[in-house]
Length: 331
Image (cartoon, rainbow, N blue to C red; front, side):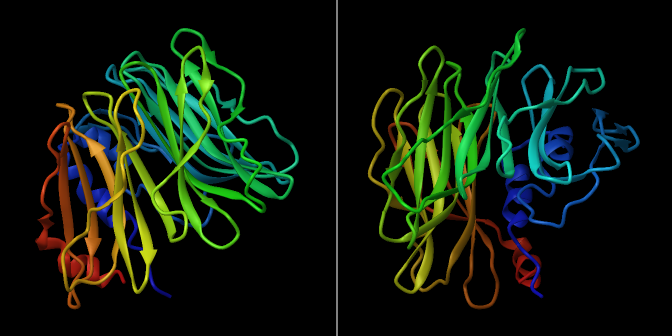
């Protein structure tokens, strides 16, 4: 059986984006892996040179799925995960204040007729957070969310997209990012029964989730979306899209308060194979970089492009040629 390589660009990207060693331990290493459910533990980090031993994170009786974690600028953290009680999978969360241990867990979803899975969480600079996940309702999956307000706590679970025009419809792989205004942007892949395409919705404090919209092609098969905000509060989404004979990496951006730009293909190198596993993030200066791996027939090196507001995307550049042999070995 072939081992997944989906985590490879995420690991390398954490290094390229200049994230601290503690952040790598919290969220980057192993991010995006699909694996069998396991008991879950965390390794709190005081600083890069002094890590504490593993500690049990929750009940030893239950099984856990797809954990995700985020950290704000003050060092506070929120972890979210799916947890089975034997009847269904629910979404749970724990919060840790900087320099302190983890608090009591809190259930984020509210439904009892289906499983919830694939949670993701992100912070804004004020310490507010948003969690999103897949929620099974009536035999189909939708995207749901719950907002954490600093000083108040978690709210009630809400649907992100109540689309009824696509039947059957299933929403998978939600991701979320927050900007400096406290607005959240969720992105996911939505099936129309034949293909999946990319949909997004923006959350505005005081107004809630805005009607979702599709970006990119609605006839090709698109999946694996990732999202980030830059320093100017522009939202940027990357994903992989299969058209014709190859899969390529595409992107679109939405200016603050504006509409989504026409999607463009990021992986433009001629004569190469499929471009897969895109990832995107912002460095502390607000600069955006997207990375992906692209097969050239002998290896699968990582490629990157930077985004600057006003200038757009840079030319593609080889990001990590030294890991070509490693990435190829995992195929």
